[in-house]
Length: 164
Image (cartoon, one colour):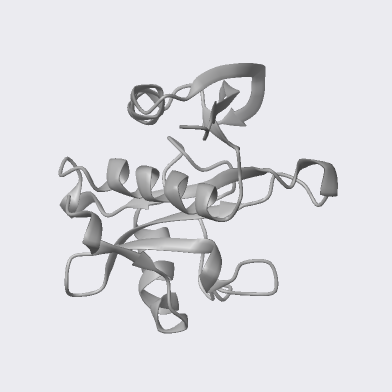
């Protein structure tokens, strides 16, 4: 994946990102029910274009990652949290998720963060392996936190330092 293919999201990306979100929905990573039309706007009062980085191979977004704050508390403004990572099935296996993850760490660092965290479902083995390979460590587990498709699934908290 070419890092230059990662760019900040623009307001005009909303429709493509919404479609990407709906076509990639899976209990492998989603805890909310499958979205049904009419869909809520992708960007809203809580989700702004500046919170997203997108992978764009030339014909529009094929992936995105969302960075946010883990809380509204001033005492942990030095932490950013990955609050979504999606890659279109048609381009998986090309390093796009890894490029988005690295770009998010760079962007978080640029915005003054010294630490980055995320939450991932325990059964999402591919995502957990990717995060581990990029320096994220398991820092906590909430066993059986979610009931998905009749099975209890762990909520795994991972994090890493952004200090070089």
